[in-house]
Image 1 (cartoon, helix red, strand yellow):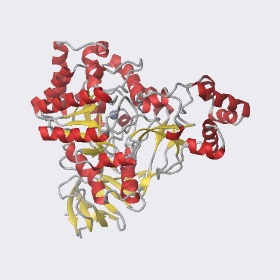
Image 2 (cartoon, helix red, strand yellow; image 1 turned 135 degrees about the vertical axis):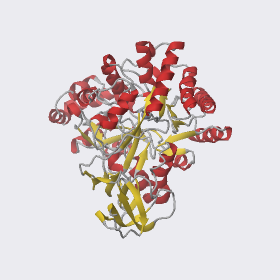
Image 3 (cartoon, protein in one colour; image 1 turned 30 degrees about the vertical axis):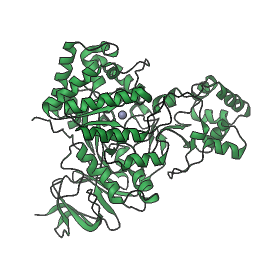
Image 4 (tube, helix red, strand yellow; image 1 turned 180 degrees about the vertical axis):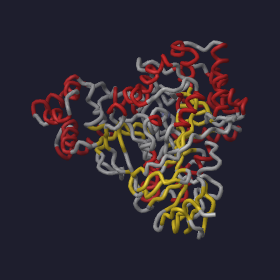
Length: 573
Ligand SMILES: [Zn+2]
């Protein structure tokens, strides 16, 4: 019997970490059926001479819940070799949700994740109320990558408790209803249950999101509901405020993991910000202690700093100041005209002195862009390429004999797409490397689909390949591919993805190991309703294949939409 597709003469990096070898991959009906020397006839042959053939990458920490409704290709993740994402992280989900609360939900997602309300209202056909109905919708939607989803605590709490969820302890009846909904979601195919204790997660009224109001006993009960079924992951946005609060959080989380028996995941980060920040090594030692005690706890880590991103077309740190606010309301051409006027510039530069002073509150990408402190120009980089050795604005100001604000104005006038990068956490590459090297961390955490104009995490995979593998040689290509594919697929229980093996689903990425890298980010207005977002593509990826079909060729969509909804191991037919 003939094959649907054969990828010939590639260099196979199979996801296991084993050394690369030359070979072919044969695909039939969405699965890999042969590997090695595959002489069989096939409907389509791709010559992969000179290319690495690897399993498609899995990103377990995204917020594509809204975007999946309007973006069938799954950008920006799809451009970086990602073929599977998990969404609904940190307690934020679009289900369950009552019709009368949709707009509030949309505004909450705008407040926390910078997903524009206008895009959600224009781009989503809300055909669901319950979580199983949401999954059924995702199942039907046309899509080029695979999606799994958590049921989110903030959504669930609002669904069961209404606005009481924002300030009240759950009653016994509330708890029963929430636990029942978690069980229902797991049986419908949720990957797990997500929540957040992070102080950076606030509502449009700047109050804590619903999950943060919950007592720990509520979390015990809801994660315990998964324990009863023997399925589902607990993902939580951690307390990252630092000091004792963070250590207390971690100790309590360990108890949840031990008592429920469910896998637990949270973000491990390194930070100079916050009150008495706990070192990244503390968090890694904690992962080992949990394991020694018998708990399965994963640290999610990214591959570089998590940044607030500024540009003329999106946010600038000064937008909140009165003279700037007035200017920034104008059409772009008029803004540029005025930015070039000496008198206006003097006023804009002078106003910077009135900004809120810096403090030691750890700001996420949200507050850092919408409620900024006076910039630390030694920690604000003028991005010139993707090599991550950009000059700081302070260095440029010293070299040019200019005020830092003038430097930023001049660079923005010379290039609309000039991007300024303020690392928020993981500032030190050595810390990132230390976290990436730990066997209990997962390279994920793009936040893809969220912070659409504030951060740019969707390129973490190509950054790992270009920076840590090619430029720094900190990992072999085999190790890096394993991190992005098999390790993540295993952690999320995707037992037929993440490896190139006969019988596995044919999710593949074909790339040039010498060229693969993220492209420069730009600001585009391509969201529903014309809303803006940061877009970052990649170079050096020749083809992406999902469930046996070629979805992208040289970064361009083929129009094929073979992605599927992934139901978790607790799903019942
Ligand atoms: Zn998140």
